[in-house]
Length: 264
Ligand SMILES: [Zn+2]
Image (tube, rainbow, N blue to C red; front, side):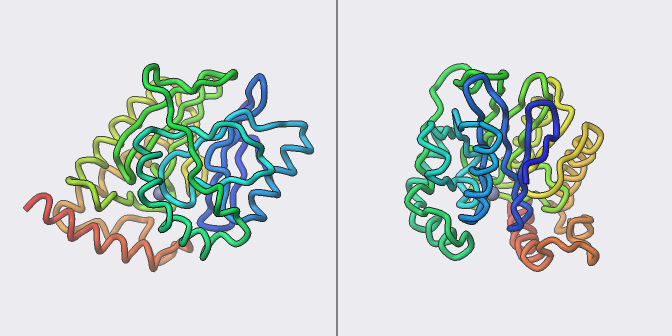
């Protein structure tokens, strides 16, 4: 179900990994960011938009992971934007992404997965008719990851960064995953300082400006701890967490190995 988190910005959360689809109201229709996971997620969202008399004017994929590049024909044929690097990456990885979606996103149309339009080069704002949306690209977590800041509403759509339930998940194929992630956090921090009052992560709960600062600090602490083989005391890996502790601990173990190697 859609929930308004700020004026003109709505969120629908999927059961799978607390994934957030974000909708921004524009003049000619809505911007739909990272639409959801299963076929039921996607058709429920489409029918809720229809009930509200809303059409999709533009889509957006924050980064080239399978759970952020899904779509459904019920959303129509608007361009689905992503960074050029994101588009290139999903094309080289399409079969793998479709395989994962086939296993984990029942009913999602696999033929529409990753059918994205690269953003034009030049000004870093979204080409659409609606509130100005500032775009910042970085290489943390995944190649060509883009964060969006909705001007006016003050909402930072962070993709798979700044989560309350996930530790920083590094792109282990990057030449220097820890440095790339730290650089990504700096870019998010700069973007947030231009007027973010709310952060919506790809997975987990939205947070206000104070919570945004807390997550930035927590993620930087985690990266620093990784360099000395630590980080397992991050609260998102704690015994009380109900979110993906088994796979997060596994990923953390792999990241410790990379963190040590990068700073030996
Ligand atoms: Zn991701």
